[in-house]
Image 1 (cartoon, rainbow, N blue to C red):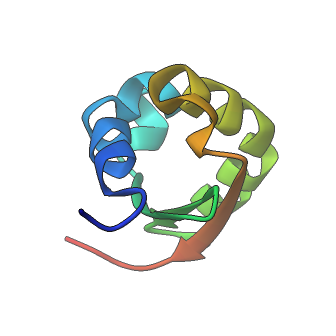
Image 2: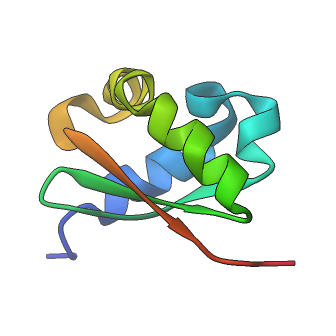
Length: 81
């Protein structure tokens, strides 16, 4: 038995650009999914604000991909290259 959320997180990663759009997907990634909370990593505080603004829509679109596994979104800024 795997960790909870791993399969759903993989599915979200595979469909991320459809969930958040191409531009936002280039600055964000789904980082973890625990207890219904999807943590999204972003590369700049401005993109964090955008994800927070769109959180309800991200939940709704995520649920199309993984069902009720996503109930809320949190955001964390982390730099990657």
